[in-house]
Length: 463
Image (cartoon, rainbow, N blue to C red; front, side):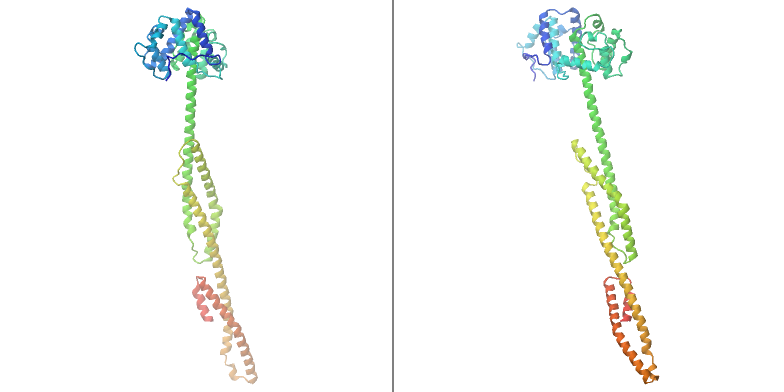
């Protein structure tokens, strides 16, 4: 907890705010304040205190009177520090000592409030590691640099015509006033416009009096206090804009992630449906022992590989990219990992099953075509050998049935005998053909030739 009763730490020249602490000591030695400056400071400091005290439901009217017992001063410190202060014991109230110091002494009261303003409103202003005053001055110079007739060099005369205040407002909220309609020769209008706009739209109370600013030398501490309210408001607005932009970016990222998730789900569902449509076809290992049907099936399979599958390979690649991109984006955003309805492993497993089915289907189909081609070749060979054997047998059968030998002479019988001997010799050769026919028929049976009935019947006739 901050001890506001403890003696303040020693200040050093390199510390932010040193210049103003040193000036405060000089101010204490100067005696009385200039009446015009005293009036400005009382108005400004009272408004500044009330801007904080109203958060606690109270206010002050006479700054030199309302802080005398220390209670509202203690409340002010609690509000601006955000920390409760311990209630002093009766008889040991160190605020009594403060009250004695400020009792009826306007200069000391204003000095005390200025010290509080320095500590809580100005000291923390940090621009390029300059002191608080110089940092605030540099901020004003940068913000008003683009505006005509504005040249901020200090916290008194540079603000007399009101254009610097209007420029600060216009720089951050151009919708609140039209700077280009303002004239340097009308300072009262400019000042009142800035003070009214700040009070109405920026919640910055009117801390300065336009007539005092124009007709006397502006008090530096009063102007600096008022300008610091602009700094804190616009810095807070910038932080709010930054936070809003950050929220917008987060929302945009979330929307993009949602869109990617939906795209993934759609692609995954579509791909799985496509795989499920083709799996039964690839699992169908029947050709009805028909070579034409088998060759048609091979043509269909090659068409599937050339035209059906390539777009799905691209879809699979897009799914991989989407999934990995999503997981990376979610991890970088500290969001839970994406768990799709159709899991990543489900897609991979389904794809692997598809490719395994393709491989098995192609191997089976090529083997089946080779088997059917061999069957057709054997059946054709069987028919050819049977035809030759049947043609030979038919001619020989007629010769064997002939009774020419009964009416032939000796010479003719000898010729018939030689022909018969040649037939018996030829019969041995044709017996090998009969065995080949039987062998082919057995192989056709073993290879499940579909039209095996006529083959077996013909084999039996020729055996």
